[in-house]
Image (cartoon, rainbow, N blue to C red; front, side, top):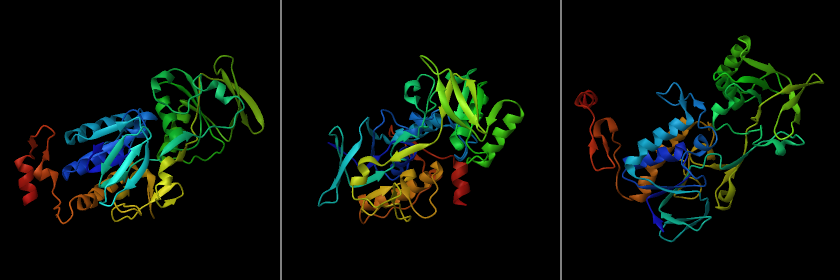
Length: 350
């Protein structure tokens, strides 16, 4: 049995940052994740995808962000149960939660935080007759290692942020990229749309709209696709076809925990992101509330406020005074203290 202060379900970027914020309050965390390594989607689906809206980082790869978060929180020595899915949750008369995984591992804590991102998910696949026979043989739904596409003929299908971002990224590593979308208008960020159109004007990306992939050809692996545009079909040789139509999220066992669910997300109180079950919080993409934005930086904010309420639950009657790390430093995992420079302390005290 694993005992801790806070059980965090989900070891993605929001879960990892929660460890740091909780650590500042002297609270210990243990994370549970069905994936075999920390990082969530950032590690499993797009470790090489650039992220642009993390403060102080004009651009950072998703995998690098996870490495930084792991480095930031390791001083607070979090525990991990990886490769196991949180299956059941119970609360006893003393207000302590028991979370049991699908492999029978038992965790106990007075606070549970659900930071499971979109939950479990599957890629949305185009309805093509023989698509399954080419999966991992020229068709990929997730880009894990962009280097395999260098100097290759790539067709990306889709009109959202992922399709646009990967088209830009692969064009910049000398891949021969064709972007196919069923509409002339794209749904992604305006900046990304402009970049794609600029690359087209430079003859570095081929854009075919409005059009659809209607047929796949090849013997042992994918060799070509048939594209339909204006009722005219053309065959195009290709090394890789990457349909990026988003993910179908599923909450999985969470739906059986008595939580208030709305449109496949957990409803929370924006005061501290607590659910309808006292002591259970939901932060990051898995929650919903009026004005919700599914951004990593918003999840960081939610984690920070959540930890303040978690402290009160774990330490009833004890008042916590917010302290600035620039003044107090951070207790190191090795027992040392990292002090801020005197000049910084003096400036703040003024």
